[in-house]
Length: 519
Image 1 (tube, rainbow, N blue to C red):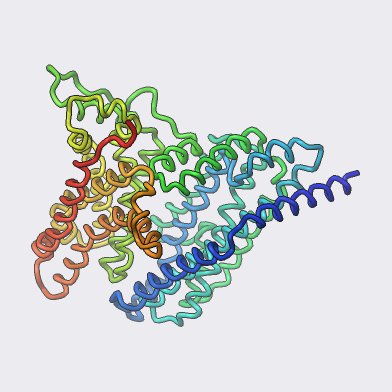
Image 2 (image 1 turned 90 degrees about the vertical axis):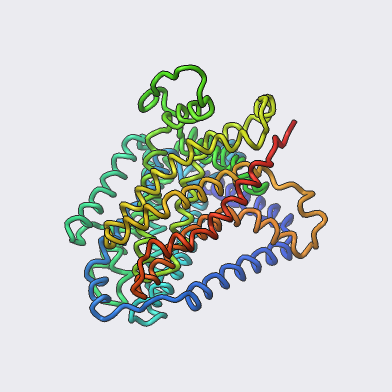
């Protein structure tokens, strides 16, 4: 009987795949894959060939080999912690609604029904991790005196194993239906051990063992095999217990993920952000962190309302802002040390943080009827909402500056921070506000364009806001060059920042012309 049910389940899966593939336009799919591969390839070639990076000396490479496992291990621990948190909320599987409604409720072995989706999730994670790790290995070979092929290979293997470990950890937690509190506690312990490793200057954490695999081109250490075994063990353990996944959590995620994919197809960034928060079960606090003092009269009502909303940010969002600030600081510190391409990572981190900071403006955009009902200019009202958001982004930028100061000379970082924190914060806030207020991609925006360039127009529509933040950080590289030439870095950075400030002004002018999209 069980064999018949298993055969029926396999036949159903084959029929669904055949039906899905029958509706796929293969030429269009290959065309999109070609464009994606071309764009990524050009970016990698430019980043690894034409952006100048300084190669470390033998002493510097020895220092990386000795001290590198702890910081790399901390990054791995953070990814595993994210997997644990996802498992506590029913992830990482994203099943289709018919699978939940019919297959999981049928009298078949649930482990057999979920094993194939779990394998696909692990396979995709390993593929994506290998790509990211390979690119990281290629960039590392630009700075370290190592063989580039070995660096790419070890980076790809490390990335794939990290993804397997993170997805496997999520499957373990989800399959055993651990509560979100328990999953968060384990995630905190994983990150805490890695942080202790970093502070103590050791490399004893399990994540540090796996990090040694990425450093094999510098120094071969067999202890990395323990990290490999741990990652593979988590993946195997997750597959073994996948049948315990909560049906209720799977049903909730199925509906949200289908909506999320539709929003991504429509390029509606605001809907994507809201659905991601629902997936993470992220809700505003019932009580603010602290209450604003009473106001005399009705002065600055927009600012006070925005600050009141920001003070109800949940702890997870506040922690995310701090982590993004730290990531940006680490990336800028590495860029100052010579890895110029990491300025892009710092800009993306600040842009993502600003997307959370512009929540007051986003709430206004979410209610176009109310937005249009105020006796104010529509775009001018959006600009008034930016004040509180700039305060939040400045706080994140302060965390970034503090992290960078811990990596580099404070005598250089502090003047640079005083010079650049406000322009960069304004650029990040303006970019996030522009992305949020764009709304859906309108067909008329590309209907009159040359068909071959319509896709490029949509790419530019989504790419220019984060690019603005990256451009606002380029004065850091100019200041680095000034120090190398024996000049004071702050005046050079201030002069270079005039161009990003001009672009920010253009973005704010564009924002001031926005109006409610649906009336």
